[in-house]
Length: 455
Image (cartoon, rainbow, N blue to C red):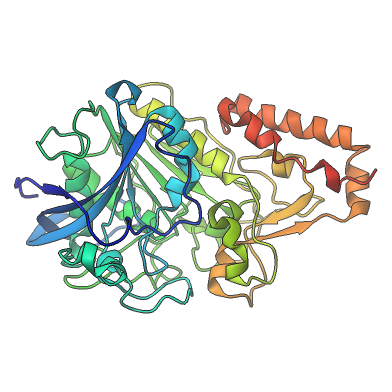
């Protein structure tokens, strides 16, 4: 990796920062935070490897260099006293054909109350230069930043996803490094955590397996909803091709890293196109796998009021993965500080380990095992990572929610008070074992649905 410094400059003109999100999240001003978008330029290196082995122990070599200009969105405490020392660097997701920050949406409440800084990096070519949606959304080719707002982003120039891994490294390393144009100037950065969801998790898995041991930029990683295969090393002048997700080689996260890694998976991620199951691996000194029962690759929390836009045949998944993800971030930060490791979690229950395996369901139709939330421990619905197999690709990623009928609810609960008691006990149990944060107790309790219980 070249030692040349990066150049940051504040982006102005045109419209506001372009970042796809169904929810704006907490009011940053009220929380003592600011949001600033930067243009960042420098030189990045591509990588080569003789092969990408299934055990994740990649031996990468530097290849060629190229100039790049991309963007970073930074949300940070305005005052040093409000900063906890950790910057969370998210690999922005381009599966829709445009940049999105799905993990910020899930984690925003914890990021702000915990005093983290957050940076969303446009690491991949499609987000800058434009490209096709991988999830079946009606997003035409050419809707990258430069097409969405040419006045604001005209100077961006991405050389291709052969360089995306080093772009992510170099920007992560520069945040809080103390340069005059540092977006985190005035904050003392003690830790950097790399995070990414879905396509970004594919890429981050490749990064962890090959780039992390070479560069040592990040102090921990949260990999959210990856597939069994991982992203290729990319090509010059092109975006990565993830069409091999089902047929690619199932790849584990290497087990000799010196920093902690937490992989968080939903039901959707284990089978079908994503096919993570063959890449399952045991926990180790610096690795944890959390599989959350009753969750989908994306869900109601992520899509919010725009659910009807998807035109799915069933209501999308209303599971509670957001709360588990917040706990995962808290544990990862503690672990990266030298504190206690994240708790170990049971795996989702399946009938076997081959291509014919399937989930083991309880009497209500919810999956057994895994990280348990109140929504599956005191259920009023079947929460699934799957939906009608004939549904659109995007709807298949959003799973489904099927209410239990009144007869079954009457069998489960003697009264609404009985349901509320069981639900509250499930909340407290999840907090006690560390998969939900105490700060989210009231929010979880507010999600109880006693009106569904027959009187």
